[in-house]
Length: 155
Image 1 (cartoon, rainbow, N blue to C red):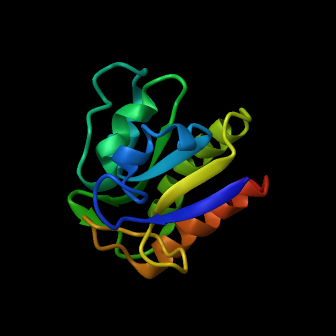
Image 2 (spheres, one colour):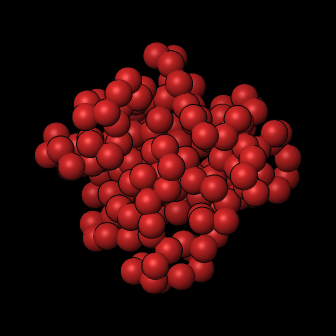
């Protein structure tokens, strides 16, 4: 399975998750959007279709696709309470690990050939446009996604 960091370079083309998710070339992809912790937890606590699937800002505009079958999107928290995670502490690691388990369960279905996440640069660093997120948190998320692609469980 490929893990692909996709850079946003404008609407209506590669890097624009809201456009990409509608293109047949990406039917085999699971899109990972940057979520906030409250929306992530609310989605986990409620059944699909319960009104917890509204579009968010930035790449979270594809949040509704996590409530449709087949599921085409999954959120991974990058912040809470209107702020990005400032450091990778035990709480943040636990929230991210919960999201990685959800993503891992989706990957295990065999329905996807690619995981696509928002990248800041060609090196594949996690892109975050709304929240300012610490580098250690961004690295942890990308490393976790890459582990899932190789069949490893998140640490």
